[in-house]
Image 1 (cartoon, one colour):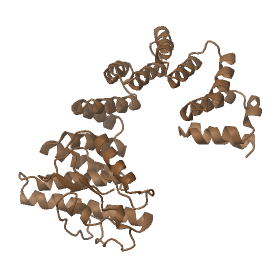
Image 2 (cartoon, helix red, strand yellow; image 1 turned 120 degrees about the vertical axis):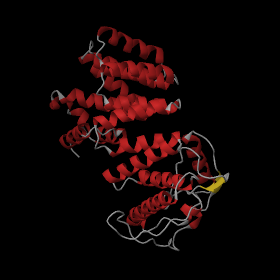
Image 3 (cartoon, helix red, strand yellow; image 1 turned 45 degrees about the vertical axis):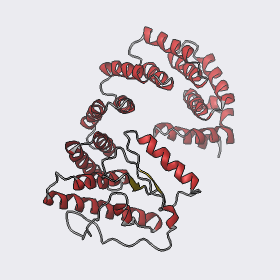
Image 4 (tube, helix red, strand yellow; image 1 turned 135 degrees about the vertical axis):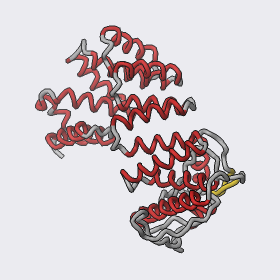
Length: 361
């Protein structure tokens, strides 16, 4: 790859807003683009900034220092370069020095969105979630259309288990972009975490809308199965509604089977329902409402040790704890390959009266 091709590839990464630090550093090291930077004109400095940030991501301080020195010489009074200096301090865990740089920039220009967002990142890096929420809330009073900020605020509220406010943040995102299936998925997950019949009904509806917008969203399909199963297992559910919930869960399973069979010709075992959820799902035939297909048995070629792990069901509101338990089980079982591995991330345990279940990983 010559320097022109390297410059074009870096430009494409910037245009697509892709943050791939290893690819950027590989291009920087494996080509002679650094010798031809002056030929790029004004793009010269964009490339240096891009490479500097990538080097921070993967800890290549030698590259960081070179890029930062070049930018400092060219733009000694630039706020943009000052923010890069602050990011270098953050990487060194010199939070006080980084905060001083951001405070100075904000004092001179309160509308500098990058500096204000770096302050939020600074608080979060130090574990000061409350301060990060306060700072980001103030930021959104000025920049109300910043979708990334709303998403970050929602995640911060999830960290402190304030799910009602987290749901409000995602609602703002749905209003701003009603065609983004990921917003519907996140909203459904938060409602599922809150629990209760009303929230589970909302979660089911939003998981369904997610699948409608993107039929290949595996996380939403699993969410649809879990939510429908909980609604069906509730003693308050009428027989007609229970049949509807079970049929919806069965259709979601069929869709998962189709997705997985396209990848490695495996299917989702019936035991993932009877073991994990304690229910038996009906067979879904093809029709206009549920465009599925008849279920198939798990192939005998599938390594069943991939599925047979058991663990105590964690009754908790912290999804990270359950995720960690799954990873520990994988390590203890020497599951070095991700092939045929299904991970069920459960956000709240209201599944059944039993204190054990199968977690299929």
